[in-house]
Length: 397
Picture 1 (cartoon, rainbow, N blue to C red):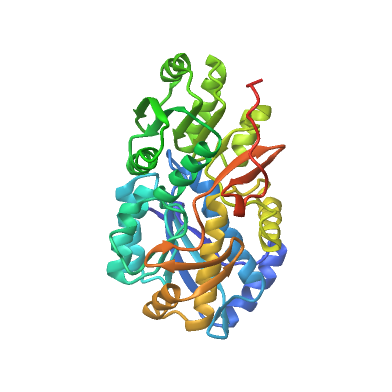
Picture 2 (cartoon, helix red, strand yellow):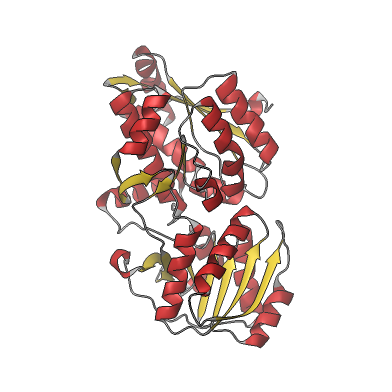
């Protein structure tokens, strides 16, 4: 089991140390804290995504709720106590930690781990113990099709995301594409969904290559693809690989009309690392600060606290999941069966707009595509959710 050095408790409710010290006794006096447990990657290959899209949101949310007097539990305010562990990007560690949190520690609520694979492993366990799991980074139709009543996926699923991408390609007269994809659950499911969507079109796949977790060099693959001169490149990639593929495409001079890479394209890190070369790159994204006034308030609070922007895809879904959990607890309390039923049957107001679930699936948000334009990751597809129009990608600088 993870030791105390890896455990993180957040009880205080304000941004400054003095403020936190003053607020904590008042919060504890209001009643026993609501103990919320989770395991998430702080080290290892999953950490790049987890420490952008999820754990910062958990910390900010708990801080804001506590600063406002605590979590409303059917009208009674109680402080939040977060109990977080590093799963070290290991599925076994992640599962054993959640089993401890739910089985022996008997925390009141849990928050999800990062990534499709970890959620695939933890969701059946959460279902067995009867803990609602609102997952903002599980992109798996297989997981949806398991029909686990306590599992809810906030992201748009592979068929929706890849369907939206193919629709965008068709609308812009793309004739040929080349594909690289991660050889794991996320990559394989999205690759399958992409192929399924492409079969309904006349678009030709000129090359397709898989790669393993931790890949260090994609240049040989990209050189081969450059020689085939496709209209579009599609990378179904994790954050480190998204940056690797983009950098090496620039280095080898591979500059197709459309360059799509995700996950990680929506991160501020991508914009910073690629500098001017982020312009025109497309990827998985669903919102930005212009999506709603509430989204802007969240964006600004996150940026102020952490000195970095939330990503324009899963971060928003993570925050929406916390909003849904908070609204449900306020309505039905901490009875987990009642929470599950309320989440399953209700529509919730979130920074992304109204969200309701059909079974385990977010039924309110369609597949989307976004593009870096002048420093913002703009939603460009579908048109009815777009914050900007698609622009031609300039040449790498």
